[in-house]
Length: 253
Length: 253
Image (cartoon, rainbow over all chains, first blue to last red; front, side):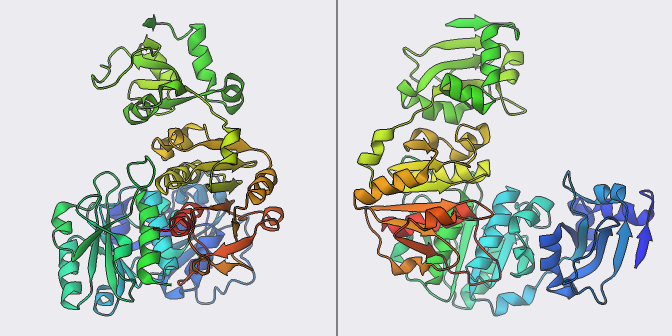
């Protein structure tokens, strides 16, 4: 166990930099904060690089922190690390993952085309995990999955479902098609009512940007495009809500 | 058309006060901001008390503002009225509604038990409208439906689906039961998988607080309590997501 007491310590500066995507990607790590998320992280210890704990905090006795690197810091340092106004006093620096090979075996897959709201992205990851998806592919133009607001909204699902960051969704679509997996786009026009397709243990669903939906070039490569009927006067559903309805329907129950 | 140029004008102070629930309720009005929401409000002119427009803004020519009271203001005043950092320059003061009698005829109803996150409440209202619900009952302990963040998240659905604010959900449940409408609660334990009940044109669904779910006293008065299976490692679904899945299932398609 180490202890750091100065906010000017170089290690503190390293942690502070993790608020920026560029630095998270360079170091290949990200930070999660708070008891719930750190506890979720501890369930897969290999994901954890180190724990950072405020000196005012007692580590819960049911946490197994054997072999985990722990640094004790004061409250001023915790505030620097934290993204919240009242930090809970525990944080974990975790490794990013990029499981390319999951695409060779996954049979229920969600593809995200330029999801920009952190709350939406986090909620979609949480929902996809709950629906038992095998993998999520986050395409270009999406907010960073390791953004602190995204992570909070996942409620820990960031550690549960394999997530692949991919600049080109079309490459993944081509690969999944070769494997015989049906690719469903979502579109308000020229689509099929989603209940017209059969639930299945093998599918890939693409949902898209909050304002523009799934891009035309992606819709052109899907096997079928689905829509959810709107019975009221609203023009559309929130993309996380639409994902929930479609994933629970498509997976079958 | 009036014009106000001083932020000290008493009318400006009245508008500013509408940021507070107490004053909104006292005046029986609320403010919506931005082109999309004002356009939605204009579809039901009787809901509009007055429009407030910045002098830099041209009212879109396709808006029918006949007989609508309009006040032109400068940008400083618009900032006072607005809840956003970069106001679009159009706002509408709208009347709150409380359609008690809708409970005598509505057959698809959503009841909300202490929903506290404004984004969740707004998204739930938008989703319920999309699913063609007849009415939403907002119970005690919920965030105010006329909160600006709630209204933004509804994307205009606040004007489309009748909303009843009710301190006691049990009174509504008793009334709906008398009318022979099945009341479904949502609960992680002691419930029935939701797909075990039949979709219907007549039901009331109760969803609850983000942390605690539907309260025990309400669950005790429902006809049946439902749950959505969790296939992954997440502990639960976001309440707006759960509402979307359940409402689209229960209404039948």
